Length: 431
Ligand code: ZN
Ligand code: ZN
Image (cartoon, rainbow, N blue to C red):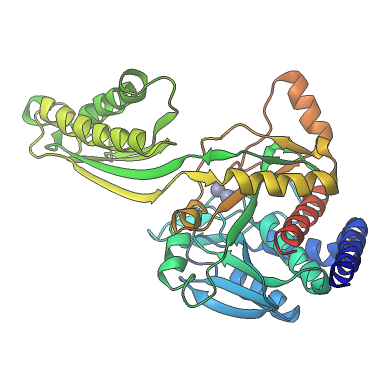
């Protein structure tokens, strides 16, 4: 009798779950106008890392309107929204809030024209060039559908708006401010990131290491300034800096096992004010990427060693300052969790739209949540216009990547897919 009852209950529950997923695309359509409205608003009003006040306020208000229990100001401008729906697991879905100092050149009618003063006091343009506006708008749509379908899942849904991703400081700041102590510590953390590496309509996944660790290194090389026509009376830090940049490039090519991925890029070099003045210092800014912790450590040690040695070789009056900052571990996608989510996505979206991706070399501080002990998975969200994507594949030209002034997601199908995929994954993880 009991077994029969249980079986019947199982059938009933299954039917209600199936009914919810079968009409999910129609439900996504029903929330889409509001999702797009939020996307366009956020796209027009981007804010730099650690300054996402209006952005956070908009997201918080939208989620409160759906009945979520919302806390703001977590780890700076971070937002935490909870929907408690009976006993069960806690699953976290994360979006970032911040934009970049990039001048938008998409030509869109709602392109950002925002300028602001950055932390160094310089006037800079601002653009959602990493597509975090897509993630926020999608999270809102997903939040609406999860609230509407709460009879089909149980547990606690935890949505977070994380500040300061682009400087990889926001996840750590939220954790430090009690994300996993003041609020329930999730059993699973999930996120998507948009990319032109896949066409809109597709979701891609990478089990295991998916994104590199990231370290910022600032090097100040010291010389002895003087007249550009009398170098014999100076120590020229520009020449030392030039040697340093070139020797740094031998670390990856000569010291690292070719089977291991590693990148050292000197993205900024500043020194001097005028052609006939030898300055007294030059500043270099580097970004360093790898997957394995031991490779990461080797790269950082070698950078410091070479910076010191080149300054010594150039007879610098003092050793360089080498500062390590903006660091985040590699993103490790829990293989079992990835398999589980991919299976539910295939069922909902068709196997042809859920594809395997190789690991990529950008970084994400979403990895901090995994490091804090929460099994996590980040999926790629295709954002390229499918026709343009196909043409790019044929011609071998790549489409503008994230952080490009031309990064223009095909937002309508991208947002539809994001909401569908997130809702499908969450319903499965909370069933
Ligand atoms: Zn980015
Ligand atoms: Zn990003």
